[in-house]
Length: 438
Image (cartoon, rainbow, N blue to C red; front, side, top):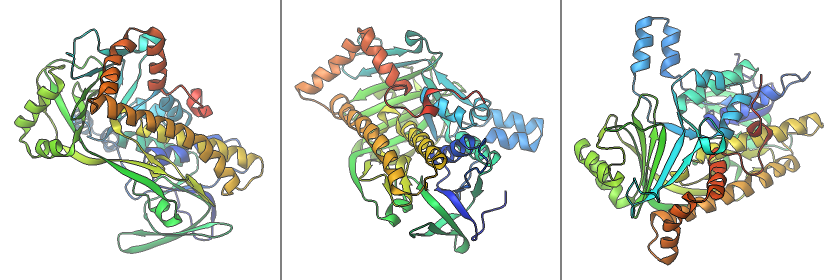
């Protein structure tokens, strides 16, 4: 599409076109399709991904298609809940995602290192227990991003492939200067700017929205591994006194590991040879899936907790990691972000239909009150899991660790946890509750 010119006034400019920013744009254009005067939406994203499979289709060559299907799965994957599936469907992106490489997981097995992986005290969640086809999907980030940005463009939004250079908030609009490398880009003006630009959000910093940031003294190590035994469409998670280890099932039969290890241990694991790393992984997993073998490189990132003090200011709103970052042990990061996107889009559509300015603080405060309460509750629960189940050694920790077996024997408690895992509990946006039939 033709890029927005400096003389145009956008309704909403979203800075950051990852899954969360892309979802906000796609949801807005989908919701406004039937309006006589739909919103004017743009997304600022310098690094637009194209999935391997789609690149092959565009090449229109059988050999390229075969190569794409055999290409290794990207290291950047996330677990998407049922609520997120509904949001992606409402955004018009699910058909393209479902046609790509994704793996549903039907069960979860969670246990503490003090018990063997085959123990009856292992906490097991099964989608069949609540009449669901699965508990969610493991999907490559680039596939989700591509599908959402295409859906946004199909609905009339524009995607500007440039970086944020400067941002200034005026009384009636936000002015954004863009750049590509050292080259100055165009000027964009919008009634509302949405910061979807991650934990190091330039939007948050420029606007002056502060955040509480604290470290876990842990490093997340991510890699893809082959295992001697099949993953059985199951997500496996073991709590260790040195962190948390998760195996996420992938569509090619391998697994993505997310090993949240104490910093000193992580240094040794990253310095180890592939063979040494696999041996350490076998010990940490207690061979729950048999012997392992690295089939990718290892990437790592320090774990931080981030909580913005406010999610909104005059003509600015924060969503996703720009507003909050939680520990990855519960796999809720992207799901919380998609709920932010759906809640903000829902409130902006209502405001538009009532003739309100989308950048007015009274509109954005409604979003902040809604989502801040939900994310704080989830963040507190996740931190408790990390302290008690992964690192705890005192009496309360031992009670929590033994409590996994108690939960496993209570169908009522298990159903409660499964609903939380599916993302279908709490105060949900409409897009998360009902699958789009469009």
